[in-house]
Length: 196
Image (cartoon, rainbow, N blue to C red; front, side, top):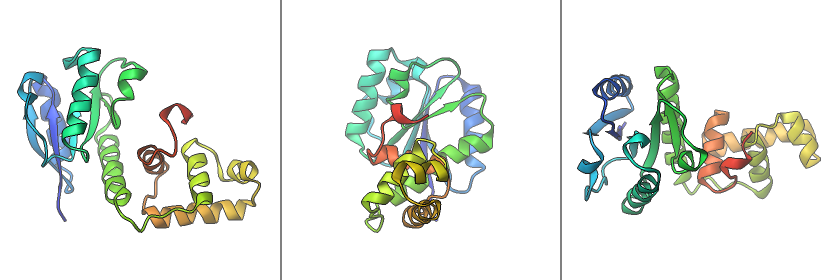
């Protein structure tokens, strides 16, 4: 099994070492690059990195948006996570594929990274053709609706709603609600504002 390569952009040695220890304890991830300053990333393409974990405090809000866009333009398959220890505006949060909070436990951090890995491998697979109804169910799942609420919303039986969810899980090979939500976001089926 090939490992997902991760780069970290963070000035704090304590945070970097903690993240590296968490990530390296997982068999599916590998930290390949560590940048201590934003200036080290100028002109550096990250083609071999699939995930970049960034501390947004190292940038001004305008510079952050520009830099994230530049990274995405250089490497379309790069997914960027923010690591935050304090409030991050919704505008800034929307720039990232995910947010890791310093208070999170290691299993939660790895779960977020694993959800990305599941989605990355599944969103590029052509066998993941969801029907229009399955997309409708997926959107409602991502919005936090229960099976009963989905059935009521779509005017179908609860058994049909459950069957659609099983089909979605089977086709995407994503089992968690958070993973399905991220999948819906990445495939532009839902916007971040619609998630409750």
